[in-house]
Length: 120
Length: 107
Image 1 (cartoon, rainbow over the protein chains, first blue to last red):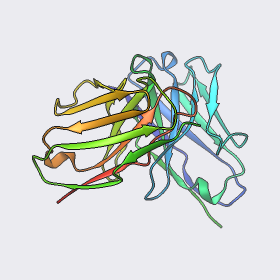
Image 2: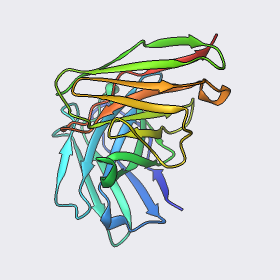
Image 3: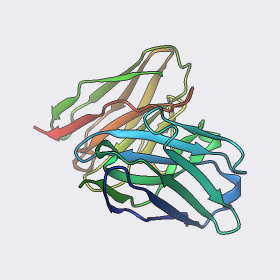
């Protein structure tokens, strides 16, 4: 069974940093691109970032480019999101998710989400 | 970036109704579109990808169609468990944008 366990969220002041983690199990982690999607309270879904299975390719939403860094450790089956220079508008539930290549990259599995609150 | 506009944003319907949600892309995306269902407090669930391919385990009352810039998600006979928010997502280019969502509520 595919399992994605998000962690690392919490309360951080504007301008601060936070690192999210996502522990994956139940599938060959290095074979899959992984993504982060966020959802602000009461709002819709926002695609944040993607990383290829090898870790050699990444892409970011304009809203986080230059501030967030996606990475992965395939030896630990873990995905990361380093978030720097955080702003109030980054407040959201962050989901890690698996991208399914045979489904054009659609997301077929999601973590439970971890809440990041940026506030003074 | 490619913008996706869903209509309507809110829909009130009864059990057994046929429901159609539209997703329009700001530029052509061929058939690179997925649909998701999200219930309150839960992660989204993949329903359809490649505009019309039903994800494994999804009931056949869900169907998708379209290509280019206009797409539809149809629920042939709305069931109580279908009351949720639905999102489209384009998979053609980065960033992989989502529509703003369509909330389906009980009439």
